[in-house]
Length: 390
Ligand code: EPS
Image (cartoon, rainbow, N blue to C red; front, side):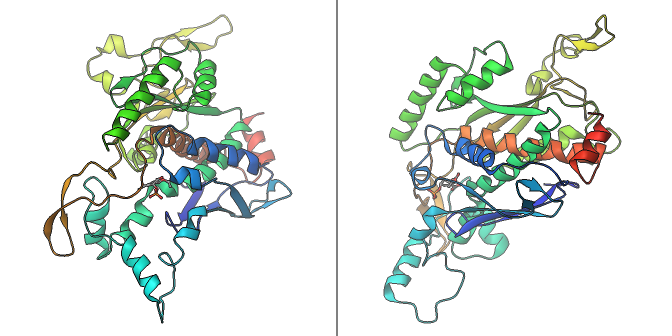
């Protein structure tokens, strides 16, 4: 992700020892609570339709550096999440080559290697691009497991944003064919109800229908995608810019959300519905109250006009495709001998849309904090707040 002020890199494989991130550009003096990061990690793990892996993992962050006595120091921050499942994969994921492998080790490595491409996954293009023979090498890093550490980074971003009163959440609006038709009246209610739902959906009846759809897909050996929404409020006007194509906030957010594994579409505000709205239906009129404050009665723009925040609530929608690892067989090719085959299957999730929503919330927070830093600058929270005028 192209961020300039709040930058980070992650490393780690799905079944490797751990996931790590190094974040750079966090001003000094910001209180970061690991328990809040852990809450976000737990939110990502919840979700009806997840596979057995989620019963093995209980993601928890270890802050390795950059934070002292609860506050950032301005130094790079290193975060780590251990993969509990690694204990079942030690021989297979060993970074060192075995000089004298036992038969047992070789059997395990062989058992976990595969060459039958999963259509829709990174397997084929990844194998060709990196010249990899064992698709395990593609799967391990392309897996959405790495989004756990991104959520930890996003949680740091959210804790910075909160200092400026900027807060957000995510909720699920569709699983397969089941759509959320009824929205609670306020964002506070949507958030409250979504946080309690096993599918991050703000309506109980819709949640039940989504659960039934997931049960049916599991029975059929199939998988399901869906749609989610990320909402952020209390943003200052003017994050992003219209001056260049790569400074537009909507473009940056689209990239950040689109690059989550499985995401196939990102919308801002009215999104794809904008195609059939006329100009007079689409554009949000401005009004002024007696205190000379501007307000609007609609938000089809989703909080962004001309690539900049306009003071309204930011509304982003993401669409996730159904997971490509599934029991239901799909025609493919075995790259070992270039023969027709059925796709490889191993333990996976039936549906991970609620998790994807939490990842998107983290990614949007990362873009927003990067933009906030770019707008107001500052090496410390004190300086940032002075620049912000609070
Ligand atoms: C994933 C496959 C499953 C998921 C995984 C993403 O893992 P496993 O192969 O170990 O069963 O559960 O997601 C996570 C582990 C996670 O933490 O989100 C995949 O192939 O992308």
